[in-house]
Each structure stands twice: as structure tokens, then as C-alpha cells.
Image (tube, rainbow, N blue to C red; front, side, top):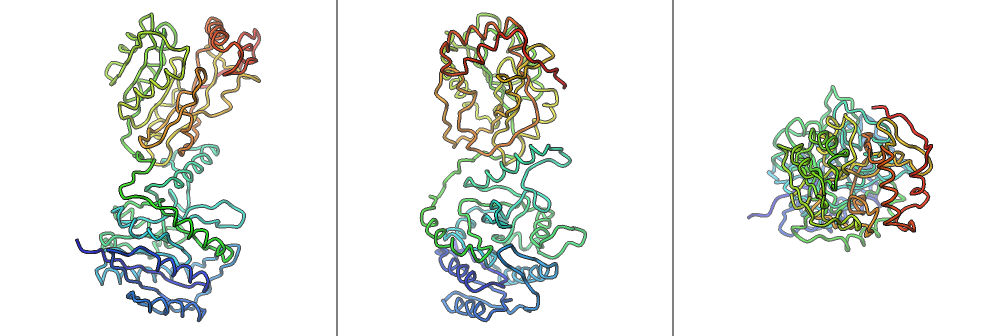
Length: 517
């Protein structure tokens, strides 16, 4: 198989010190078994910058330098970059010229890189190996001073960093959480589909021949030629991807030159063997199935029928671990879940005195079914009714691997409790996770209050949802007395929980609030 031909192209109007680091990183790129040529459009005002380009072209690689018109003013300082509209479309013309050159000379790939980027040596080889038609290597930038670094890729529109369906209404809390989750996702080595990208992009010949360009789309108001390129790509049927294995370094302002050497040293430590599967190997954004995981014991005459009937409206499969029930709990499960694939396992002896063992057993049973998403509910927990419409939107997206919800402790069929010790509904906890086969899950090793999921799932990207969960298990005086007695038997010293909360279970006058659906 012949070596792929790659044209590395860049319009350049850059300060000498920054340009030198860019060119040095191009020299360091691993080029074995790749035929690499260069095309620079020299729009520099500074003689020293133009001389750097000429010197680079004398190093033995085929390098073409085209003179730009050098007439637009580009303001760049420590505060940021000021892109005038005319300058944006001049750069677009330069990039389209590079595209035309790549097509005329029959290159297999065009690698468009901005001249203030420092690349990891493995970047080019790795991007080619992904076999994507359009893929960018990620870099992070403080677009304004004293703000967190953000990526040069985005999810939608001008620069949305959160995922949502069209016309989906998100609270500000959900929007913020999803933004954090998306940014967390991009910090994990992997390849992710995005809605917009630029500045460090490998484009295949197939994509180039489709008619891609950076030319302005007159009826689109988005700023920046990269956005117009991305819209064309989507219309032409090309997905956009970002790679996060080998993040580049962006010298957005001169003060960031100080970090280049540290970045170069870090590159020597960051290598990946061929065929490495990232921790997030399951990121399907459609056709995901939902598996209910549930632990039950003697639940037939409590809330289980209501809970399962409701869950059956939106789950695809179920895995139930029966902890040696002495009533007809198993029959209830089978009857209500008729028509839904069900794996039901019954233990010969009860084991709830050691909750961690049961939770691990349920987990192993569930993941053995190769689930996409796992919803772990107890037999007395039920979502509010709008879950049937909402949950498909949560599980069919590529960025978030868990969703956290608020749990309301019901003290009657119509009211939940709220006071010092009963305010679970003010916090979010994961009930729904995407199963990642390559992730090293770790449990909280506790016989009580160990958690329904491994404790480190929040190391994966996630978000909160405004969907609420009703916890019915405290709804009657009989329920509360049994739970109190169980805690006193299993945790008489309050080692695994809060003794004051245990004692408050029997409070005769708790503060109750009416539930509004």
C-alpha cells in the first residue's frame, strides 16, 4: 500500500516567536510512511516571519509559499483576538485556495492548521489512522483572560457546549451541568462526533471533492469561516469528529509562549499503543436500549406492582435479583414484565445484611447482558410520569455517561418530607448510567449504604436532569417502623449512617410538603 499523500496548509499572519514554535512542531511531526508537502500563504507584515517560512522551505520538504495581499489589519493582544468581518472572509479565501491546490495535486488528505498551534508529534499519523473524513485534534484556549480554557470544537450553533434536542427546554442548572459534562467528556482520550470544529483539521480527499469550502453562506449569521465550512459538511453528509488523544497547544497570546517547553516535554510522556480502545468505548447516540436493574425481597404486596408497571412503559430489558423472597414477588415480576426480556435470578438465602454483596451481584448479572444504559431503581422508587418522554432524550446522545436525579422521600401517598435530616431531594444522585465496558469500576466497600452503582462513576462525564424520583418506601407508619428496626439491628452505632437521622424516622410531627406532578 502506497504512503498517503498529505498537504499541510496554513494561511499565516503571525508574530515570529509564535510562528517559530508552530514551524518547529511541524518539523517534529512523525512522517514515516507518509508523503508530506507544505503550502503556506504568507500574509505576514513582519519581515522576520516571512524569513522563517523561507527557512522552513529550505529544510528538504516540498514547500510552496504563496504571497497574501497583506492589506487587512489584525489586532491580537493579551486580551484576545479581534477578527474583523473582512479579515474572516479573506482567510476563508486563502483556505479555499489551499483546498483547490490539494485537489489539483491529488493529495489524499489536507491538514489545515492555524499558525499559532503546537502539535504533538503523533498527531498526523493518528488522525490519518482514524479513517474519518473530517476530524480535528483538540486544543484548549482561554478565549479571555482569567477564564477557564475551552475547546475549539462545539456541539451546535455559534458555540453551544451542551447537547440538547431541537426545541428541548433545559433549566439553567441542566444547561450548566451539560456544559460541564461535555467539557469533561473531551478531557477523556477518545474520538467524538461534534457539531463544529476548526483550526487543526484533517480532511480526506473524498470530503474535499464533495464541494467543501469556507466561503460565506449568505443566509447564515454565524461568525467565522469554520462555522460555514461545518454547515456545508453536514449538508453534504459528512460527520465532524474531534480527537482527544493528542491535544495540541494553542499559543493564543504571547504570554503563553512560556508554556510551550512544558507542553513539548509532556508530549514525550503521552503515547498510545496501536489498537488502544479508549475508556469510553460505548458512545452511541441512537438506538440505545435501556435495561432496568432491580433488587427485590418480599415486595409483592408493597409498591413493586406499581413500580414495574410504570417502568415497563419505557424500559427495553430488565434484570432482577430476588433476595430469597418468601412471598410471590417473583411471580409479580414475571407477570408484569411479560413481553419484556427479563433475566430474573433468585438467591437461596437472604443476604441483605451485607448489601454490598447483593449490589455487586446485581451489577454482574446486569452487565453480563451487554447493556447500553442501566437504570437502577429500588422496588419502592418510581419516576414522575413525564419520564416516558424524557428518558429517550437522555440515553440517545454521545457525551454524557450518567444522569443524576433528585429523590423525594414520601411520608404519605401525597406528601414528601423536608427537614434537617430529610432533604435528599435537594441533591442529585445517579440512577441512570451508560455502561462503559473498558472503565475500571470501583465500589464503596460497605455492608450498608454502599450505593446502587460503583462509587467512581462520576469520573465519567455526566449531567443532572430535572426529572424527579418518588421514594415511596417511607409512606406508611409500618414502613418506617420496619426500616428503623432494620437500621438499629444492622447499624446500632451509626457507623454507616447518621444516628440522628435514624432516630428522626419515628418523629410524630415531621414537616411534610405536598407533591405536585
